[in-house]
Each structure stands twice: as structure tokens, then as C-alpha cells.
Image (cartoon, rainbow, N blue to C red; front, side, top):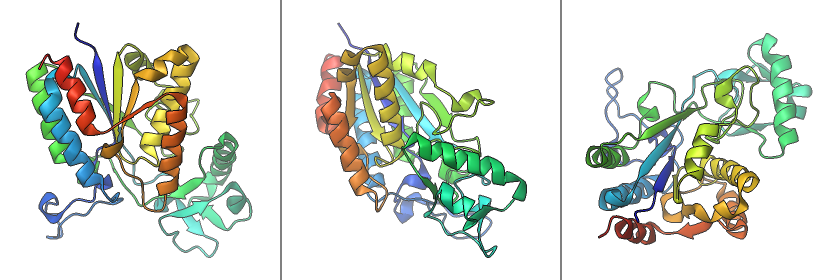
Length: 292
């Protein structure tokens, strides 16, 4: 009997890919080539491998879900939100702690945002997963950087044509008051915004699958956060279901400087029973599932 094999692709977007010049169109307003805002070294090669996996194994795939980091320019994790103590700009990749804000080393540009930002940073650090990082403005809704890597989109379009199916798109990150690395829920869910709270429909769809393959960018952040939340939900429902999860390790890479976080994540997931595989191994499973 054919198995229900589900491919979950995390944030395969231009802004996260170290794209070569041929993949970067000209900006008609400036006449210069657009550039990814937050390129992850190795991500372009990851996405090429992932596209080939979908292309060659598409008849064995029963479902594809794609998460899309989807931000506004003004966001608590973007430089547009913050100023330094001297009123100057805050550089990308600056880490801001709750104590930094309390001591006025950094401040929101909008004075009325201070109390809410303080409550957010306190809650974020209490959760124990991340400290706020000021990222470059990235994956802005409507921008080229928000778009899916061309090879991946072309491959899953052909899957849609062959399967007469729809790739499910899962947007995350449009609430400017909370970081949303994980497709399952924001780091600090907003009680007034259901989109930041537990994505029950995603978890249920994954639980119904016989196998869930996870790939995407970045392995140190959004793949990590999403998988950790999936594991938490699976453990609460049925710990044996963790064996369904497969991380495609040659289709993800870490943000520069966060290599250790990805390695630690993979080790912890392996200890919990999550499977690790290369894309070539996954392809063989897809071909078997397709009866080829």
C-alpha cells in the first residue's frame, strides 16, 4: 500500500539563499542586481538538491507544505525598530537582552513601544529558547526576497501538475511584536493574534502522515525551531510518532556563526528518535513509494 509521505520545506526563500549572479534579477528602480538580505552559506546548493529530490521523486510524495517567513519592514527583530542609547542606528546581528532595554543601552525608536518591548524581551528570555537578535530586514512581504527559490518552486509546480494537488503555503512572521522562527507557533504567542498561536492544523496534518521529511533554511534557526515544536507536539500526542520525522541533513545549512547550534539541534533530535537522512536516501524511499 502506498504510504502518505509528506515533505515539509522550511523557508526556501531567496533572502536566505547564497544565490549566484544568474539567479539575481536587476532591480528596475536602481539598475543593479538585487541581493539576498540574509544569505546562508550553502543554501543555494541545498535548494538545488531539494529541487532535484522533488523532481525525481515526485510520484512518491503525497503532500508538500512550504513555510514562508513573512515580515513587515517595521518589526521588533529588525533595525527599523531600535536605536542605540545615543539615538543612532542599531546594526544588524546585534543581540538585545531584557537587561539592555532596562538599562537603556537600546531603545525602541517609538517611545510608546518601550513597555511592550520590555514585556516581550522578558517573556522571550523566560522561555529559554532565544535572545532577541536584530536581523537585517528580510523576507519583506511582497519583495523578491520573500519569493521561493526558483528551482524549488519549479520542481514543486511540476509535482502539483502531476498530482493535481496544491502545495500548502504556511505564512509566519507578520506580527511585528514577536519573533516567529517556528511554523508551529511564535516564540512569544500574542493572545490577540491567532496566527502567532499553535498551528493545530499543521500538527494534525503531520500526525496523519506516515513519514514527514523536513528540509529548508536555516538549520540553526527556523528549521530548528519548527522541528523542536513539532517534536514537543508529537511527544504530547504519541511519542512513538517521532519515528515518522526525518531531517534531510544535506538540504539545510546554518546561519554563519551558528554552526554549533545546528549541530546541537541535530544531536538532540537524534537522541529523541528523529531520523537523519541524505537526499539520496530519501529519493530511494520516494521511488519505492511510487512503485518504481
